[in-house]
Length: 151
Image 1 (cartoon, rainbow, N blue to C red):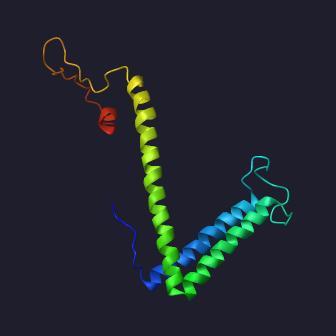
Image 2 (image 1 turned 90 degrees about the vertical axis):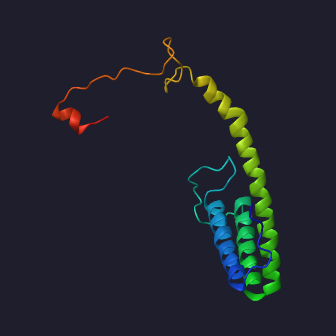
């Protein structure tokens, strides 16, 4: 597993700041317009207008975080470095945890379901009573239509 780059270059830190501005900006815009709470309709009546609701306040906070990350990463090499290392370390541990959870769910829930569904022998792996896996070939008609669709 590859670890976190503890000594990123200045351009990597500045790029990180711009990516945070873009990411938080998009999250804020989606939250501003659509909201995440179940009582909001998918296509709100307010649209882009301000109604002072919680979703608008949270969207502004997200935009503020994006702007703060960008300003710190653009102006302060040490501050940007610290944000980069902390964020990437957290993301690495989050990724490890989510991968473990998702693969565990896949292994514990989905694999047994698929093994129970398999009732037939689609690959014909069961040995025949003759003690051989040999199957007699079935000849196909030699027509132009059969040549167009070989399988």
